[in-house]
Image 1 (cartoon, rainbow, N blue to C red):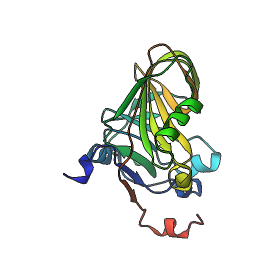
Image 2 (image 1 turned 30 degrees about the vertical axis):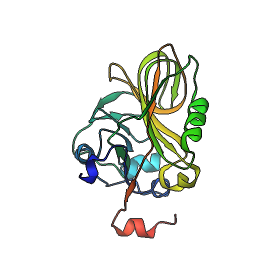
Image 3 (image 1 turned 135 degrees about the horizontal axis):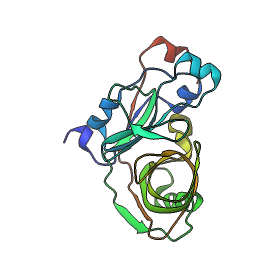
Image 4 (image 1 turned 135 degrees about the vertical axis):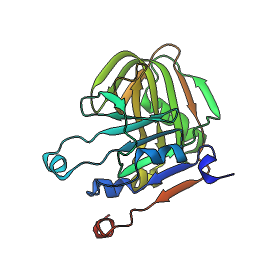
Length: 214
């Protein structure tokens, strides 16, 4: 079996700490995603002017092998195959656990579920259905239907992949979304997840990466 087809393996490019330290250009293009996963997250590269102005970068969410750009206003559009990401995580998502989330389930409760399932193992997860409330870094949604996809990152992996629940939202119309801050599920929402068996990490090969203090 080719590594790219092993379900729930996570393929990550670069370190979250490297992105935070300023490595925000280059990286694999969107076309890379379809070779390594069906679902994923990422951050698109920013040019020097955008970085200096503090402008929010575009986020990436991949759902069912299609990647979408989430701009600073929360508008979603299909991503161009050549768009590059200095940080990204993807997986061939095949959930092994599925539960109906009680109405009002929030991110804290979801994280508790994952910690009971395996607090030291990263887990890809998906929540589909209605959300009573969903706050993203781009905008806030009320009574919205759509999909949240992301990864629950264990504490030891914080500097590598981020902290806690790292996820993005895409509405049912695939017209809006954002990087998730918090949420409460509505009636009929479904939570699915799986344990990651192997974690694959690719490193930038340029001098900029080696010059960072991370």
